Image (cartoon, rainbow, N blue to C red; front, side, top):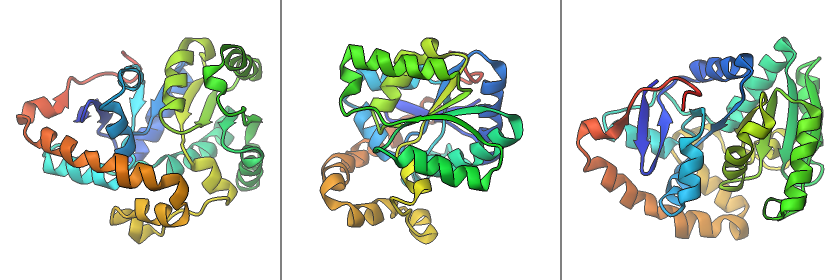
Length: 262
């Protein structure tokens, strides 16, 4: 599969249906792996984090989540077929999970959000096996004892798919760290997806998403939490885009790979 550069990380050039197929193949293969969903903020953070870049390089699948990155890929003449938002991908995967009998674990989001999202999804998809939901305490990822406790709970549940709603870079770094420990489970970073499903946070209107204004909608609803991200950190994407556009065309694409082959 073709990998298109996005600053110091990348995403695979796939359609939404092809992405679903690739995730299903990963699960069916039974050797584990993890899926990342880069957006503008991930690209900017990766400029300054060797750990995050390593997590991306170790991913089995990278799916572009952000209209501005779609536009950048077109300017680079290496267009992604479409945006693959985690908030669209996870519900579609839950439909597949119900049909295929996959065991699902929700890790992250605030207390009670995972359970509420699970309830909503079970009503939509009878037979869906969400075997556990867990909202670990803040900072658990930096406490070796607590981190190991959470990992053991995941291992004991034996999920086929681990949905991690911990935000970037926490979820990416943990997926990279835990890749072998949780196999054969496949993990996917989902950001605010569980909050969307549970109804705690509303998604932007479709027209705003297509216009690349989803960030503005979220900023207006959660200004204190998101102001630094959207107004201070993420404008660096302009500098990253300029660097990408100055690359020769052949340098904008990485070697073709097989899913999970790295």
